[in-house]
Length: 157
Image: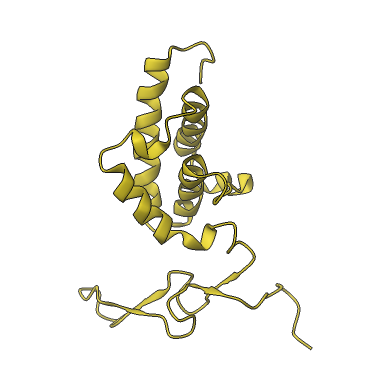
């Protein structure tokens, strides 16, 4: 439970813990990673990234709490962006921005590439679990997104 009367020092410490927790989730590449990334990137730059509130349902209870903590921490410290509370925050958030560029407001309408699942890359040897070599996806030219609108359930006529 977040106490609206807690002091700023405590709120800032909890904010840092929650930013770090959501970063770990965002960097895992799971379904809940997208939700964690949206919370962080929206708190980082709300003009470029918007949080889809429905996606919070992808997070378990503990991580929904961390999401609320990030929002509350940003509210309590409006000048303190999330990259400022962690070590190497500029680099970490630059990587996060690049990893989730498909969530940028200018890309929200675009469809994720079905060949690379929106990553922009594919495994060189998908059958060799020891080989972590990647190559750019040729279908989407490494963008992870397709510019054609693909409406689910409707065929192009």
